[in-house]
Length: 171
Image (tube, rainbow, N blue to C red; front, side):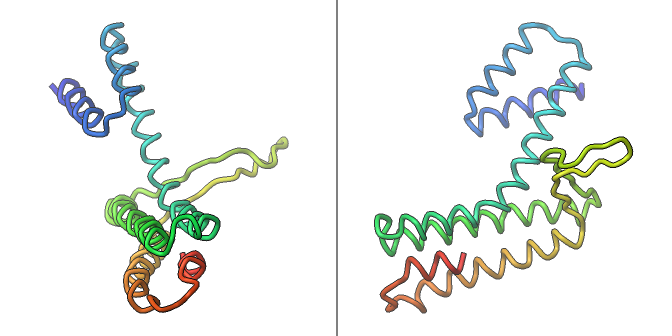
């Protein structure tokens, strides 16, 4: 029963996100009749991929907004720079609240390994992000306050002639 319920929930999630590549993979797995353990392992890998994507998204989305407002500010215009930087920070703040629930309230720290930096016989140093209780608390607080500052600055800095540059620096 739980396997069937997890299959249905995964199918609904895939339909809602309209990720047709994942949907086709899902249907291929169902038609190949993989055994229960192989299928559960596939679902676990998909969940790990979505969680890693979420954590990396709320880290790099403000940088993407700042880079787009700074480099494409003249083409975007004042309103475009406002919308892009504020929405990037608002999305990051919402994702950080989800991460706050997962890491702080559910007590499950997350480590994302990007690669190996140094590897020797007894020493292994990895490039990784570790999200524990302290780091997620600070990240979520900073992102929430920063998104509110962005909302306030839209009206406050409306008479500034270099609005795009200001919002790029603010992000």
